[in-house]
Length: 426
Length: 40
Image (cartoon, rainbow over all chains, first blue to last red; front, side):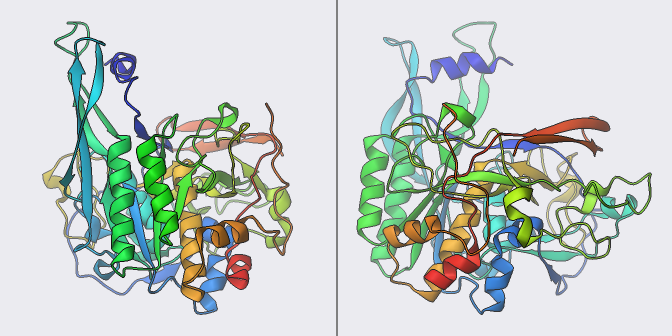
């Protein structure tokens, strides 16, 4: 498959691609038999520890009463395997798609200009939105392979940043088949996941309409981006902000080549990606066994082995910014960073769900082999929902906060020493 | 600060590789939920 061919022919489309780089570390179950559901122990992770959302939960703020429109790939068909059903507003879920067509004159694919409504349920091959959602509200987790490696983890609920928000899945990134086989016998048709500016704008407008209808406070979170800001997106964002909707977006994964849009648009709260220097394993600690790689548990807060606690006093030294996290260029504005390298979460992926958690009642092995349900995924796509969750915690306390308020507070000095202000390297 | 370390991964390479991170960075800094909620 030649990806550059379809990509070249799509150049005139303002493609809103998924901002994500992925490290595939499948650690899921080979056990597929269903079992009764149970009340799971709630556990924190390195990323929630790093931003202290667990501390805020103890203060009584969990995002209750706040709506979050997740503009992404929708939720995986088996989303109930991961999320509490009452946290997903299925009655408000929506999808938007704009088809593309081949233009003989320009010899390019172009948008049709017609956006239509689709389901909020995503495909089995595009579960990015499921992972993003999991960071906000948390997810069910169990991976017997961890036990096989010497780290017995019981079924747990991995806590989210704002576990009590109401998620509104809005699918604006869809599966496309780019038909190029008729152009050259050297290239087969290609399957891609992306969205158009009009589809993204329609998603933003939809969330704004809901907010104006009374579903508020409302946050629009977008772990997506493209090389430029269309007037459709800009108008939709401006309308959202005017009507009290909080808009958060990922900065992009282009490093010093600059930020993507809409994240780089000044009114949007943009989020870069950070990581923890002691991820994978702590160099000062001894593994339970020399034969067992410690990376298996570094992401989960657990005192059993005593090496996976993020030390608050060490944030300035222990937190790094991923080299692929977009830096701001002249005219761009990066507001804040959050954990994005690497974040564990459900990522069922293609071709199916062969390794469902044992308590789930999904499709299991009926679909065929699948390397895993849970992946470490890295990207500003993963950082963005952390800030969205924090914004939800803020809005629960003060529902009247404006976009400017949330951005200003997010940029304010911290009470503890954090990574130094970013300096442009270009 | 920039750096790197060797990590062991079971998949897909079943072996050790170098994981590196970039130089300086961060916009206004790392988000802190407790500070943000206190100021909200």
